[in-house]
Image (cartoon, rainbow, N blue to C red; front, side, top):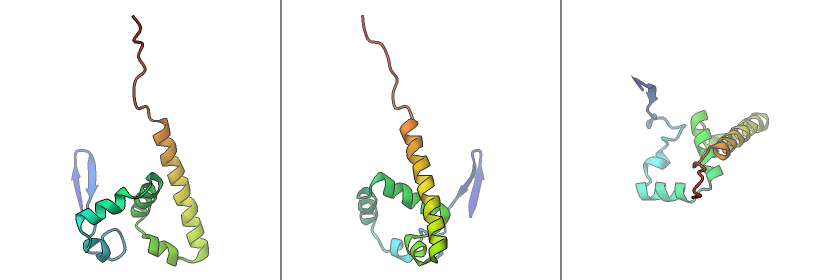
Length: 101
């Protein structure tokens, strides 16, 4: 289901499908457990999980893929992680000012 608005469409996750992030495992976790699972991940792990979610596959589905398909998917994931990390590194976090009197 999508909801369109001023900024474009907003895609709601399909919590009833058994293949993406709306799996039964996640539905049985408490919010605290989900938070702690995410908080314990490194930034690269969080980016990887987000990319897999964007691709609509889980780690288990990735592992079950044939070798050639999995290698291609892993290369694509690695490229996207690299791109996202480079984007973050290039973002400016502050402004340089001269405070001499």
